[in-house]
Length: 193
Image 1: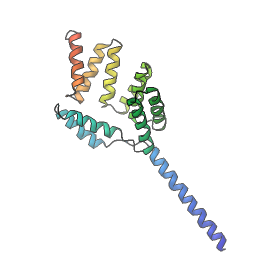
Image 2 (image 1 turned 90 degrees about the horizontal axis):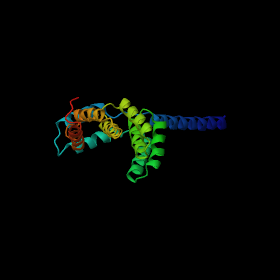
Image 3 (image 1 turned 180 degrees about the vertical axis):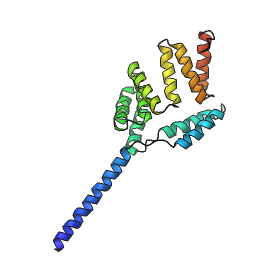
């Protein structure tokens, strides 16, 4: 009887360990969303920012967006971003594709992959991933900037101008976007939208 009790105790312990490991794994694989209240506050600050503070607030927003809730997904995001920074978008594509496969509700995976696609001259897939990014995160001013750049490059300058104005609604002090708006308005002869 003592042997049977030990056997059952060991078996119960192993089952508890397996269940705990499974719970941790499932918990890490579920997509987490950035703190929406904090993002709302940051976007309010961004609208009130000046030229000296808007980039810091943009960075804080991007940090919130980069929170997947999973160490594994965060690592894939980091590796993808590191590959982009190293000038190897083909490698970045692999990391971002794995991220999208494992966390399909995490907008930053699509956003990073869109950038990698763009840098490898795959405009169609880049646009598809920008569309998915904006579906998951409609305030993603980075994805909007990317969309505007692509629209401008393919000759849809009026559409690009409209998207740049949408970015300015979210991020009014963005100097690169203001410069793009000025350049396009001058080129288009002051055409009103």
